[in-house]
Length: 158
Ligand SMILES: [Zn+2]
Image (cartoon, rainbow, N blue to C red):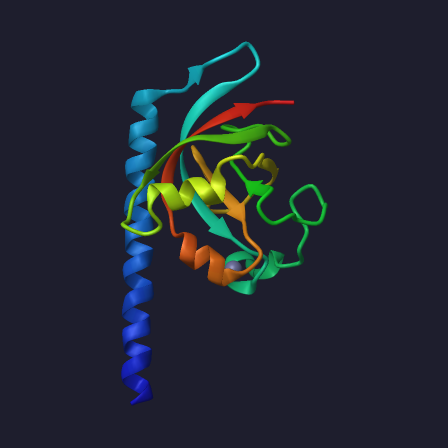
């Protein structure tokens, strides 16, 4: 029954889409209330919505050429896409705390994936507006597995 499988797949992908939209709205409301917190002269903390992308057609459409907004080759687990009004391009972005939205991955699993890395915003995206970051992954499977989350990050403009 391949049709049934297709219908189920369609339903699941639509559910995820609706969930992402709702998350995005609640994040933007929260950020308006919380503002950002300056921690040193040169860096600040920001609560962001985090998602993952790769260079595939699904994630990048016509921009799936493996190059970032600045024309450099993307680097998995380093390149991130941001809204430059919130996080300046070429800043250093580090994770401080994790607020999972779903049961999986767990907070501990997210810490293993995200802590200790320095992420560099050199990309932008049509959906990447406000306080959110989109992290480049080596495969689409990893993007799906990593899901979406909230996080507290430290931003150090260069
Ligand atoms: Zn992808």
